[in-house]
Length: 160
Image (tube, rainbow, N blue to C red; front, side):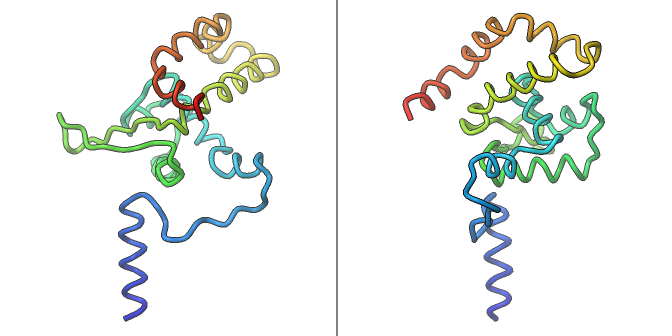
């Protein structure tokens, strides 16, 4: 009986997008925590697509130039959901599609993504992503545009 309760409890918690027990972190270091939440290549690229390229559908993420595998995409989207960086809702026009949206927690990563992109442009291969390079050449314009898109969320974050 006890085992059944635990399975049901875990299943309903997973359905809700949370775990019954808090995941153990490796240390109290904020950098370590940050890396546990969003520190791998695929998670950062999904966040880039979600926040900068405004992708919202599984298939859109799957079609990104980097060629993410379906199992990795599903795993990273689930982790983003579990960590509160994205929400998912059914598409009212097509119930077979899920719409992924950034939360305030994800939107707070915009400056981080901007700095990572600037670093990549300084030290990476110069010819790879022309659209990103153009964006970074007008970084202040990009920041203003993004602030306009996520104005409400960013204001709430700044208030604390």
